[in-house]
Image (cartoon, rainbow, N blue to C red):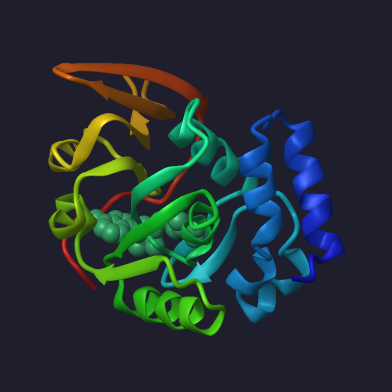
Length: 212
Ligand code: SAH
């Protein structure tokens, strides 16, 4: 597979910003971000910036994609079953497909769901499965997941998702904190115990109810 110079520079940039996990850096390297941005944004595809993808939504900043993926993995070298809520452009799912056996991703906007679905088919991402649905309900049929990632801002914890997280699994999401800001938050399930840790402060489009 040919890796573009742009993607190499992008990986170097996020490494300098503090992403250390080599498996994550390699996953970012293997996914050409230019495939996931609109025609108008191609020139900016390799910048470490969020970009518009249509329907009022954005493809996340690559550093944030890498950071959330790193936190999702924790000390594990590979995941088996991962759920993503908020397919958007499909970029985060494509990155996850390099570190997980299967990726299940849910999107509530039909236009974005259809676009991502055809992109995954065209680019042969055979271990990504898409669903057009309200992702706050998760995807019960393929649960439990050893990793769950939400890529839209949550004002409250989506409780239903937690019930689909396997023992020992991590759930990573941008969650509203007491200080009024959103932080990348990691919930780790160990038996009956749920631990919670806050990381970078981030901006995401909101998690919404229902379908469009
Ligand atoms: N992971 C995406 C980021 C997309 S932005 C990427 O790599 O490009 C967040 C996405 O979450 C938007 O597409 C938005 O429509 C979607 N979203 C918001 N609320 C949702 C919900 N309840 N269920 C599923 N998707 C949702």
